[in-house]
Image (cartoon, rainbow, N blue to C red; front, side, top):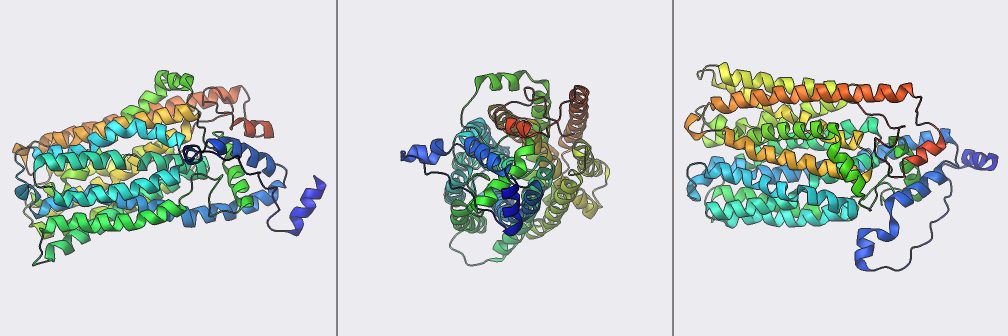
Length: 517
């Protein structure tokens, strides 16, 4: 050990014994990673890391974290921004005669808005199973090309049924992105760092809203086109997404064990960094007992109900912002431009509340507080007179801060559910419930009540109240579970306890595990 420490003092990056190459395998085995199990490789890398001086590892861990922050986070942010932009094209195109050109009547537009979430709903659990089994970076990279093509395909449809079908398939292929990034964040960053990093990539919904509004505004000024203005929006966004797909496919890592942007030594340090999460990296084997534990764990159902609440709120905000603002008496171009500040509200809200959530024991409180701006905005939409239309528009901007409780709610399974099959199950069900809520949300808006939609506003206020109440209950439950384990003297400090995190134990089985509250 003394020789190793002396070597550490002499060089910045110690030599690491190369891992022997795996035996030749089929393409499916290589793509699925069966010959390079992340948890096995992760445990080997951790054992090597524990041979080095801890002070040196601490210093190098800062460098590795910065490298991940400045390379991987921007990649995730751009990918998620384009994903959200693809979804929001329907909202922007609606201001330029989409419904008239496609002969939509009654609540046809509402069903088209819901179609994407029907697609995500039916694929949500399947995607989480696939993401546990196959490399995240390559899978997401391939799907980016597919959803770019589907986005452009929307410019070719001409009726309600065609639009519903294309939006449904867009939801299916884009359903992988959120669970993939939740899993990847939990694999690359510590539990203390995850809330802020997750908020970084979801905050790009705000950037997407700004960029989408400006693109739509510019498209609205284009004249003498061979196609309608609303179709141009789909083609521009689809082309941008397709080009970005090459970057994702080549450089997005599958985890700390094989990140191309890291050296062999840095991968070892990256694994050592996240070993205190007590979650390992990733395990390919599905464990039926963990599925059962997820189903009977009361905390799972609190997480799922909160997901349904945020889904209802998001389905309403994402698809009816344009219709609400236009109903206050603005023309199509003005309506599009007035949605831009809402994106800034979301960007700032996600970043600020994500930072607050990194403080000790502040995750649950942050989720609750981040619900209040949207709640206040709904009260304004319910009570302010029509003649104060800019005040009403300001109330719609406040709804965009909803992005913060959504993303912080998504981090909960990554932070508080251990056991790879159990976490996959909870994440899969969370996105099922979330997307079911997104389907329900738009149907709260009754066409006869346009433009104020008072029934919808009251229902959304009740949904916020339910979300806050469920989060209070969840935080209290986790607090008492942690106290019970503290009284028994369990703490994850010793070497064997760090290695225990790679044994695929659930949060209930691993008594060294502590819930984030």
